[in-house]
Length: 115
Length: 113
Image 1 (cartoon, each protein chain N blue to C red):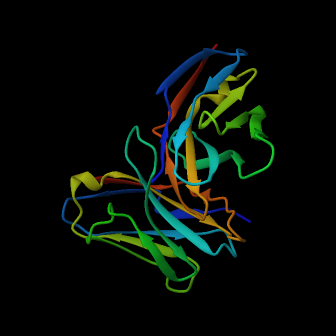
Image 2: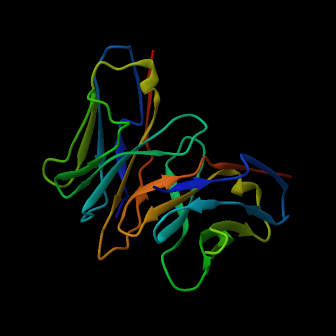
């Protein structure tokens, strides 16, 4: 098991461009989460999937953000018309839920810089 | 709603000294509690977790934490730190049904030789 992987690790883009990030969870993990972490802060929840269903979205997730997990395995997070305020580390986590207890395992993150 | 407060943004300590990183939470329901460590330019690594049972939880790298329900605290401790423990430490809580984690603002542990 290689853990949660994210691609790319770093992305620099110009304001107004669209970007897409990918997350590959730990094999057979049924939940997948996206968080955003700005400099000097703790991660903030964005959204999560149970298999392919998107079950919850934070108010932080504006309509410029969209996430998918089409086959219940990998997930993508797209940001349209990027703004400088989108600059942050985007973290993905996965877990296997059995009953009510779960532990989330995080990937290395994708650091986005919007110029 | 739930929230997490990490009272110290930075904790400087000399190598081989003991350390305590403080975490307080608020929640209207039962909680699960976690400590994660983040090294520079990396993701979060789970140190330890409290789900139920014994209130003293032991984790990796010699860290331990104690869940105190009456004081709504989950402080992280290590009896003797190493230079390699220098990192950002995050306390997090999830509610009774699992799912989203709510994180504190983090504590930067700086171990000096």
